[in-house]
Image: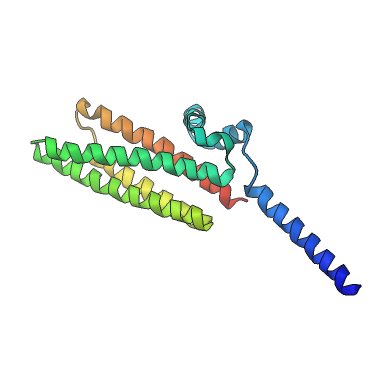
Length: 181
């Protein structure tokens, strides 16, 4: 009988532990929780609008939201990287070509950083994500610095970089949220 009692206690403790573990990451996020996370960025409305525009956001937990934000950031980074590569080929101005090459290389590194972040999410190595986010942000900062005060015909690419910074800030906030769980 004592063995039966110990087994029941062990099973109950296991169930409680699983419930506690899944409640921190496993529950579906509400609109209020998503807005609360977005309020930690400098772009509350843009963050919320972007996340809610993705159909995957409708039924995700905290980890799922981080995965969605990484997917959105990856998509945007890849588009910018492709644009920069096409500009490298299209320009005859050697100074601009060098800037485009530098930024293309930076965005290549950003794409790599986002792949690493995705792997960290899948392995639950959340504490390692902030370093990758910081690295990606530094790559973008270097690219913006290279553009400096170039003529207004680069407004399009500067705008895309600004949009990417928004998405990267969402990755930062959603992954930081996992570290607090």
